[in-house]
Length: 87
Image 1 (cartoon, helix red, strand yellow):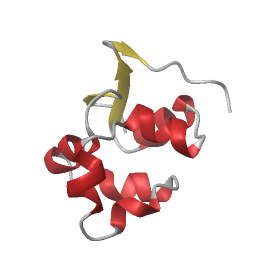
Image 2 (cartoon, rainbow, N blue to C red):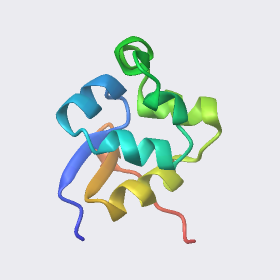
Image 3 (tube, rainbow, N blue to C red):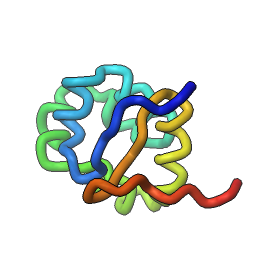
Image 4 (cartoon, one colour):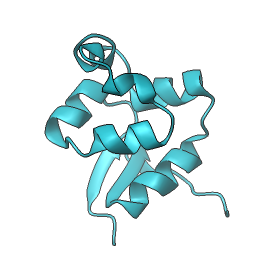
């Protein structure tokens, strides 16, 4: 699948999931299990960005970018796509 949807890692998680609900499952697959808890998206999701969450969970941005890309999302930072390290 070719990436077609651009998402900036500085976007709030709440806004991402509101616009693209499938992102919730993608994030849970990567270890962001708390996003599945009732109310968590409406509270922490309003202040947390994907970049901050990755830092907290110690998940490299290239790992997130690769996973999201497999599902049609291209992660960017300040308008530039996230560099993917070789597997």
